[in-house]
Length: 298
Image 1 (cartoon, one colour):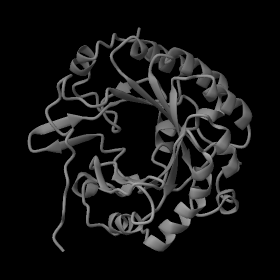
Image 2 (cartoon, one colour):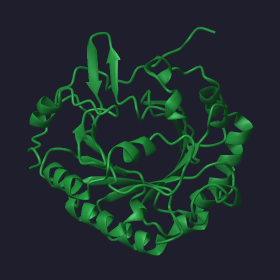
Image 3 (tube, helix red, strand yellow):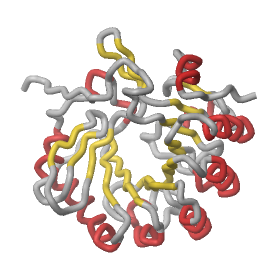
Image 4 (tube, helix red, strand yellow):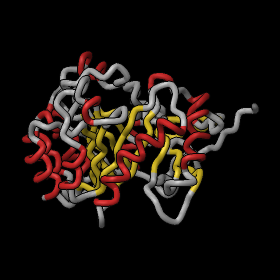
């Protein structure tokens, strides 16, 4: 079968007018106790000692700039709720998303914290395999699925799918979360099937005739919208049902097409170094900061 590619509409030469999201992903300055084999973040904490002071200084600079979205990832934001509160207080006028494994220890304080900050527009929760019981065998003390109902904002379930996902396994995962989705009422819940970022490169980032994409399109007949994050494309949509997506592009934030390089977003590492890509490149950083009115952290 011939390879089918769909390129995102956002892949154009960068200007403030054409940039869709003015985003910075912030690696939380504290590591995670989990050791998921597919994790791409552990190396950042191993090779770069977390520096909360530098991270917070940069966040003050970002808060006073035209950056509109802050994604807090890890590591684990729940590992130090005091620092998390400082970050949310700084970013009070931004749109904030938090990536977490949603731990049992500290869950009530975490829920209270995010519910009291209106800037938090979504919580992305890592859940793998098919059940809480199986998850807990290799994840460090995760909270029960039902605790998600206590979170007042939108929730996305990030489900790692590994090398292979077929429609039978996909339906099992979606059936599990549809029960929570039906109870979430005014706030949304959707599912994101996350590929192994270690195996995603520019050559397969936008490939649409993969097994997982075709399975998702089939399963979409029962559920709601099927969305490919990397391609910025809706693959299938029904009137009612729970949305789900295929996510496979995080480390490929800068995508080269011909001679054009699209900077998708900024990355603030746990050691307090601001970069323009996940490989710690700072190419174009000064120009980018000037466009978004980001003043250097002292």
